[in-house]
Each structure stands twice: as structure tokens, then as C-alpha cells.
Amino acid sequence: MPTIYEITKEKITTHLAFRERALRGKYLSILALRHCELNTKLVLNNEQLSEFAITYASYERSWRQVLLENPSLQGTDYGDKTELEQTKKMELGYEPKNTEFENEIAKSLEEFDKES
Image (cartoon, rainbow, N blue to C red):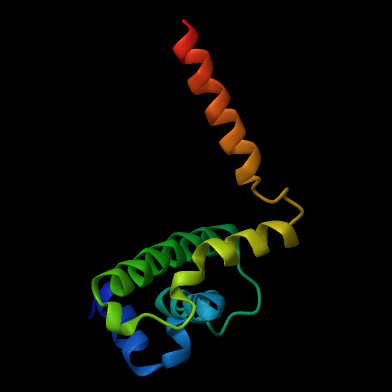
């Protein structure tokens, strides 16, 4: 049986949309459900859901590793990680990262450190 990494790499190679960060969740869910043999179930018990979550995380780590090791397989939005994360955080109600404020804090801490 192929490893999760091998399955992930094969699917990334053959399915161009799977390379895109914005779409990876859907593909990873399908792979994890198939791996756990849960893709035909309509209702999952706690044990099955736990197995799915663990397997999904393994597929996600493999997805990142495959693309890191094979830059030619990276999707068009591979470099957009920070922007996509910020957008998702805003959708979920988190405050956007305020780098200007963080820079001011860092500068203030440097000045404070020099005074001592």
C-alpha cells in the first residue's frame, strides 16, 4: 500500500487544482475519508471522526512537504500563503495582523533596552 506522502504526491502531480492552497482542503478531505474508508458513511461516530482528523492532518503535512520538495508542482497561489491566511482570519472574525503596530512595539522595546 502506498504511503500518505506517495498518494499525495501522485494526486498533486495528476490533479493541477490540488496544487492550489485555496482548494487543498476539499481534496485532502476526500483523500482522508477514503484512507479511513469513511467516504461512503453519512454519519461518523467519535472514533471515526478522530481517525479522520488525524489522517487529514497527515495528508496536510504531506501536501506541504511534497510542494516544498517539488517547487515545480506548486500551484499559482503557493506564494500567497500570508495573504490567504489573513483573509481567512478576517472571515473567522480575528483581527488582521497590524505589522505597523508590531514594528512600533519592536522599536520601542529596542529603545527601552538601550536605556538600561
